[in-house]
Length: 127
Length: 127
DNA sequence: TAATTATAGATATTATGAGTCTATAATAAC
DNA sequence: GTTATTATAGACTCATAATATCTATAATTA
Ligand code: SF4
Ligand code: SF4
Image 1 (cartoon, rainbow over the protein chains, first blue to last red):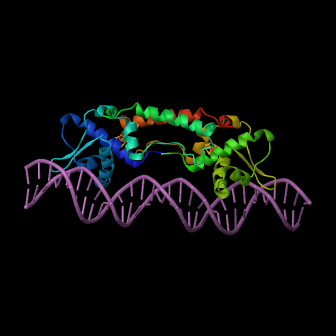
Image 2 (tube, each protein chain N blue to C red):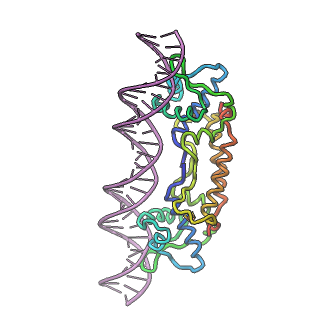
């Protein structure tokens, strides 16, 4: 019952990129991995998913690295989580006995509230 | 990012016990397993944890089985989750760079709200 | 061309949840 | 007291996904 280490890495990476944003530079994965003290190869895989979702921009080649796109201030914590872990679901129902089921409805309500809370929090708050 | 299947089983078992409560009888694990269509041996392990927490009462021997204790109406969904999965933590911080960390604080707030919501929901609502 | 960076895929490792099996203890019926 | 029925506990296996590594390739700059 927790978000994966991947989302942990992703949130930290985003926060770091955001904190360096004003300098406008590109930050290679090696620097990020050093800052976060994690494996750079694994971090690469995580960042690749953020790139795919356009939450960060990757630039290949010398002097390349990762940077934030225009409008990055709107990216939510929820966005990042979904990019890495997929949609969070507190409760996976293998049967689905219908809409009237109270267990399902209760868990769905709690889940919806949590998702709403995560959508309201943006990466920019993490700086 | 979801509660374990064990909590799923536990919530369903509690709901079933609650629904049969008026009859006052004890329900053996085999009947519960049949109703839920799950392995009875595994369900046993799950129920054992609920027994340990006093959320259900086990009676050995013929005509034995599981039943709900006095005051069961106060048992929350959160209680059951903790009994099976332990304290839910959305975010596990391996470093802990101090109280002022915004990532940690943000996730903790979302987590606290979710826990609060689960504490406010009781098993009795699931009948 | 050479150096530096990201990307993609295959693969390995690890951790944990999920489930089984067996032996033992407790209780009720007979 | 004996037997049948129930729960409990522990060791054990199995399956799956997260985590991590390795290698090859593509893109970009100097
Ligand atoms: S009872 Fe409700 S939560 Fe449980 S399996 Fe059926 S639909 Fe799903
Ligand atoms: S930056 Fe915050 S969330 Fe990240 S490791 Fe440090 S204390 Fe934990």
